[in-house]
Image (cartoon, rainbow, N blue to C red; front, side):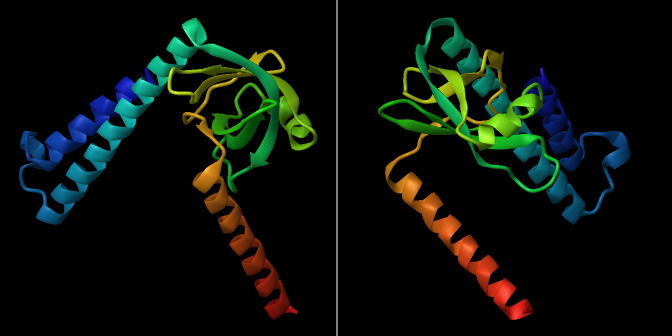
Length: 173
């Protein structure tokens, strides 16, 4: 539902930027360009949200089911209501961002050794659905296999962030 609303708002912004509303025919060109760009971004985000919902329903209805453990990987700063989790089985790991609504009581357990989880995979071996200790979560992105270049880049970025934090702490003292 939110994906459809986002597409409608994006299309309205594009129409406003192109001067299709009588009250907005005389807006400055710069503002019109901004309206069209933001509208296009909203349309793209809405379509992605709808696509992700369809993939999630497919995974729950007939996708491959895997049992494993989910643990907290990263909590973004701020109050955006999402966390990054690592779902691990005996042979592979996937990283996925999920909404914290409904799983607030599990966040402390996720930070430790993790909680038992059940993942629902699509036909492309991406994670589209995740149940944590029997609670169904809402993934914000498709879970990608956490291996190879993807893993190396994230570990390199974490090492650079730690080095930056250490250097700023040394400069302050």
